[in-house]
Length: 287
Length: 261
Image 1 (cartoon, each protein chain N blue to C red):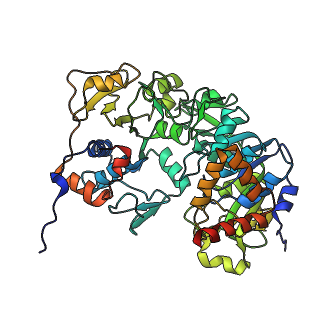
Image 2: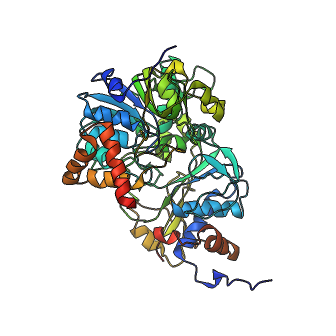
Image 3: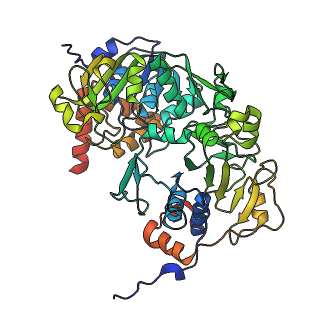
């Protein structure tokens, strides 16, 4: 049986500059941050990032990795706006495909189903039609003759998602309240990489019930065990969002000096150093 | 029986409480729709509507559960879960038309086009906001209302920079598929209630909050409002509504953070 375990660095070594990469989660919730951090340290560039955007997009923009962002929103949830994303947009530093958030779902679904587009009412009449030059409408061939948005398939070269549990073959489990669209990201991608809080024997996956098993090994190319890997985003029920850290991230992103210090402390070295720094912060606060 | 607690209904009704009931009234008559408020005062309003005149409304915990009962803003929802609505199910419900959202626009114009995406040129904005989020899909699929806690000319603009929520003129130009389910109900602000009950669906001053003049609303609106004869005052809360707002739904007074007394 295939053992798909790998490290964040091995995931990044399979990626190339110019790729279209989908990132799961939603806003500042259950983001595959340990793999994102490995991407930040890499020499990859010119990436197209597809995401229900949170700090993943902000950080990748800040480190100059993004050529184009495809999203419905970029938000940190408890803090509405990500200053790094704002700065990139306001400088005109990135290209964007801004869709209604439901259109992103349809684009991923079309990619999974290998159809060129799916029709939607969402987008009609809005500036989504104006600012996305390639976007077309399609007329219903039936008697209603409605003209709808033809949301193009969003095929991904790779998908990155973070789940609560997985086995070494790539069956992955969410234990929180919402899968978000992680299964669609995986199925829309040529290669999907799942990080998880803990790799467990397959036999342990059944306990939480079959509806928690929506990421199946046929979708998955690699599995990374990454405890606290979604930090500072939430990973319910294993842990909530680290609000203090997120606030520090936002303050740093607004101030070049603080940002340099933030990068030095948290992002310059590897994941183990990141987690050590986070743990040191935690001890300092509770002391 | 213990002494009856002093009802704070004796206190003067605040502007925030006027706004709460004006928001609540947005969902009047909706029945079994998912009421989706954005912002504190709309959230108090939606819970008030369900606790009183619109008991069939569906409300969420703000995360992924439909929750029954009435609970205070700023506190976790009670355990009375009646359904599951992860984001995917929210989209399903939006496209089925079974929702009435109240969103908070950064800009809105006379035909109800609303902007939550970016200020300035979309391709190099002076200020990046959230992105269009679900506003395009929401507006062309189900009833939509808006909440504007600061009614100012920079919010009520002649033309929005990025049409996120679709207005009546944009839908008309786009065609019947956009206009088919477009249903902009009302815009509640700190000064007034506005609607689109005019022949061409241009924004009308429906009522002014007690103590606010028609001229004050006009002066703070960056386009010509339709003013149709004498403008009535926005209704005040009933005693029972005030009790629910003050004792049950917002005992900590979070509404005053959005609309100071």
